[in-house]
Image 1 (cartoon, helix red, strand yellow):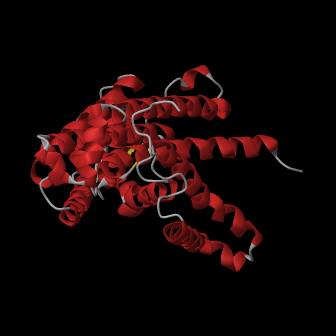
Image 2 (image 1 turned 180 degrees about the vertical axis):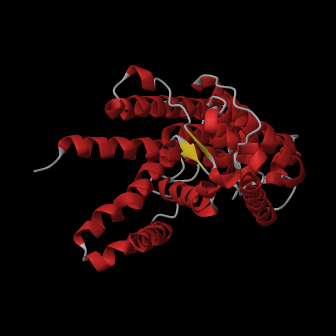
Length: 323
């Protein structure tokens, strides 16, 4: 007999995680899809957003726990302050990163951003005085959790994630379909021509980098509060950067709807091996991670071969918010 309650709970969990990754994908789409910034340092903003929100919202450790937990601050503030703090700190870090990197060519920018992202992760890993080092942070509070039965809480959090995702989508669409957004597309297509028209290329790239980083920081905050614990090993390039790039490529670079679609499609394929391996012999069930990589690789290859613009592709009309 099918366990409908368990199935509903699983799909709620899936929708939450896919929604969070779609927010990351929207942030990357601002960088790459609309401006042409080859950012391979998504995991860095993911990490900063998650840790910032966690440190703002957790209470100070007490009792025996305080003897082995070290962190700079624990402000015990409500969830909205954590999300806003994550967005603000990621924006500031993006500004500092952009000063030396945004004048680099695409390939050098990619090398610089992935190096910076890994440096950020290793700082949290090695410097235990910041956020408890390799042990990470646990007990991160969840918003509105005291109002509902814990068994039904995921439905509340799904509503929060979807609301934030829609808000971010609307803000991005309004920005991209404005004169500011058209300048970003002009920079992406031909930077020299945009410069000849009097546009400050560096300033617009900086604005794009900060905007996308803010969106990624919000995604990191949502991830931390959903999982209730984070550690530096969570933010590796594979899970924090590569999978998000695949989502954007599959969904359609330069299309916010495509970014969201790619997030849900690829995360669905990412968890699919959990179902497939249940029907395999016991000796092969441990191969789920390899099957996952195989499926993602095949899908990416097919998309690049037959639909290089992604499932949705870039919209031709960029000045209209509604068709």
